Amino acid sequence: MTPFYRFQFYLFALMAIVAALLFVTRKSPVAAALWLVNVMFALSGLYVMLDAPFVAAVQVLVYAGAIMVVFIFVVMLLNLGRPGQLPDLRALAPRLGAGVMGLAILANLLAVQRDQLPTVELAPHEDNVVTPVAQSLFTDYLFAFEITSIVLLVAVIGSVMLAKRRATA
Image 1 (cartoon, rainbow, N blue to C red):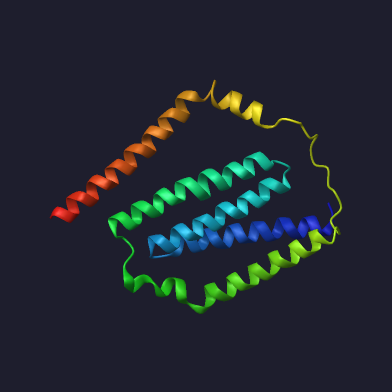
Image 2 (image 1 turned 180 degrees about the vertical axis):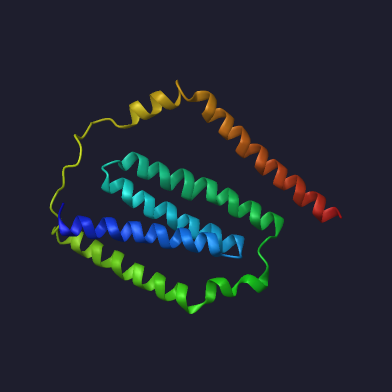
């Protein structure tokens, strides 16, 4: 394993761990959701390093995209974000941490752009990685997939009903 590859792994792992700790310790649900999005992006970077770009894309699109948007929508709908909790996002430590992580990622991007990265063969590369995932998802795990979508739909409908009841009371 090359030193640059090892550095990338530790960078994404550190980003995931720090963001997960910040996710758990936030008082504001909006700030916690944003830190959870950071965790999802860091895990996506680790999936790319494991030569699983489809899983990384699904991680970003489904979890960091769709589910977190629904979560933020429900939090905003229920008005759980209080103005007194906004200093959570304006403190100096999160800004410094974000700046350091941003500089590290920028340095990685510049190194990749200069083609200093040696290619690392981790696994045999298949031409079509979507077919096996889709085939097992829509055959073996179809029931679990549908139940999950129904549970998410019921959660959104329940939050809307709670918000309407709170507004009328």
